[in-house]
Length: 118
Image 1 (tube, rainbow, N blue to C red):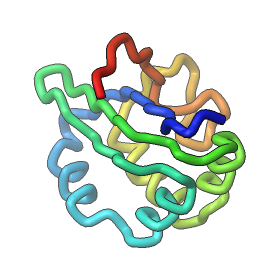
Image 2 (image 1 turned 120 degrees about the horizontal axis):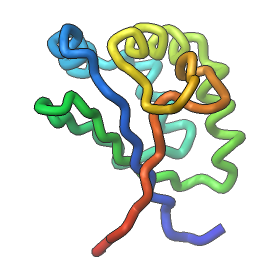
Image 3 (image 1 turned 180 degrees about the vertical axis):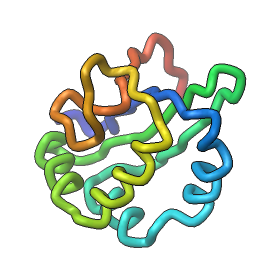
């Protein structure tokens, strides 16, 4: 694997009626969830909101060597599962046919990086 981190971008739609609840829960993310994210080699993780379209954009770096294994560790964490159950209810996936964050299809839709300047 390259020594450079893998940059990842993803989008999902936020339900307008969930706007404040989503901001509130992300102002106080559960410590167990934060630890699991870091333990799965995710860093420099941000979520941005375009309130006009209610689109959330996530940006992160993956620095590990086995992305699928790390994401399986994330999915196996019961607290992460509870977090996703809560936040999935506030969102509308842009992944056709997805049933939630535990769905193998994914919940957040990946987007292509078309430009990067370090």
